[in-house]
Image (cartoon, rainbow, N blue to C red):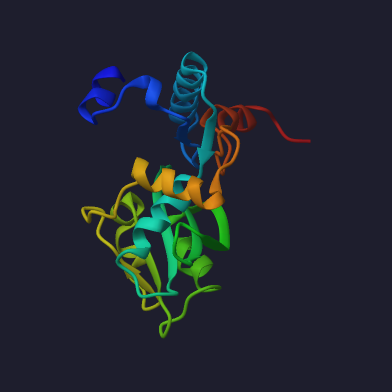
Length: 192
């Protein structure tokens, strides 16, 4: 962390807060990231603020979308699913949620987004979920931003912009689905 701060021309004592992506995402990755952020915050004596990774990605998608467009950030959730939500950006890091974050199988994404997008007003879908979902997202009411695009990944700067616009939340993980271990446990336990 010291090397990263120094490369940015910053010293640890210059930090006034730590911002961390809280998901949705995988159980282990979120726990490690949030624990690291909380440890840094405690060591530096600064607050730690969480931010939705999907909201941050939506802010970046707004840079390549028409004003007022439906923005649908999609992150690879593994298990042949994506974490997805839908927003409308209002400038300055402000967003209106149109569809709450959830984990969906690839084939269910177009149906879910049809509640907020049409062929005449398509949703702009971007993030690494576009690459993994592939042809399942190739429908008239979705415009796909390639994952290789500069706005195709969650960036720390977008997390900070979202927090500055009032999008901060507690530094607690948002999974949007059950962890693998819980799914395996439920499959192993016979139902009533």
